[in-house]
Length: 513
Image (tube, rainbow, N blue to C red; front, side):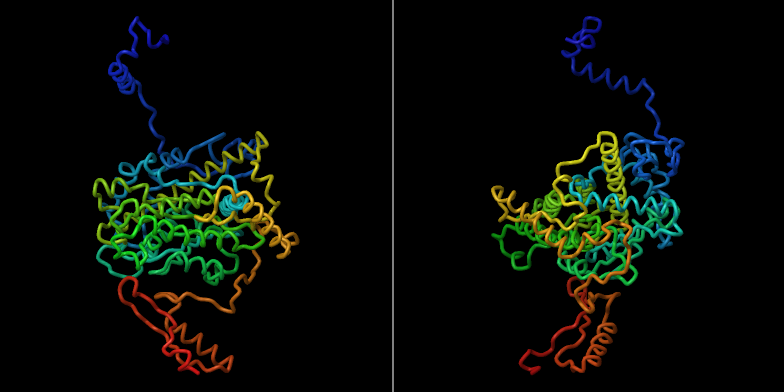
């Protein structure tokens, strides 16, 4: 028995209820420290300029040392986060009723203890993604210090109709609503919080598509002209809804294992995207790859099936050491078990503006966690001269390494050999591309055409539409002298998956000869 247990001759271990009562009583009589809700000042402290373990990365020196948590930063900034969350692009939402709902969600429904569920995996060991994390925080630091001469952090978001805001604003049936969708809300949240354009979010979503389309967009450098000059610093895959759609040929099969089918489908599509993104910058530091799971259903009856994407996402995030975030995990129990319709539509995969806002909050909180773990690692490297085994085994500045694909065919007995082969392949690509003669740092922003195509585009309503396609094909025919027969533009603006614009064949090959 300890002295505490034996105090006054009473062995408290025999009285668990009394022990619990004493604990509760102590919480009631001992004043708890109040949370300081003063706006957090993002400027260097008095000691920031001195030699500290964080001095090797200035941004880390702006925060409490030697360590801080995402929860601390979130809680101490709640009032400012609330104000930064107001969407001035939609005047109808700027009223007292909406403000009360916003504050209720932030302060009551979604405390930091719940927001922590958003973080599924943060990059930790891989040299390429750690370099990407270091790059994005350096971009942020420079933008904060000298916004006139340093660009904002560039974030490219890929996804389907959920990502472009279909059904986001009540009473409007528009196929897209970019101002209401979470990518714009994320940009507003960050920029209004810092009172400057710290980030630029490019919403590259295309309704009715999946990760396969996003993989080609990244691979063939299919970015807007402004972004194509340097490429994104961050790429976000937000295809959880469309990648969770059960295969059409199995949906009506009563014996089909849709849980496994969706798991394999999601893993294949997301893995293709990851590998394309991690090699998209060739010799340079790759963009930070972020997975945004914003899916809650309803596309199949099995709850395990509805969570298949999240399972695949977490597996791949740990395998490739990428950044995984889940809005679904933040509100899944509230939506499924308690039936709260704030975050979930029981009849449709598209949801309301509050769900979109919560997605933006989820990414914001997870980003603070990424910052916290990054600064902790920088502290360890500076104080203890710590470097992981993975760092020693990697080729210096070679960001072309990819682990062997994570498939059912990859066996434990073979993985070491496959890893060695991947290292050799990365070294051969490094030499073939002449990477040793190029600057691999994050300051290299020269214009470089990285697409193997003369031209590439994605046909989509509101984007590259019928006039643009017709103009391009007419110009191509005129310049090449080759007449175009048996092809035409197609414009189908029906609901859902039929919402397509494209260039389609009207004749068979034999008819065209």
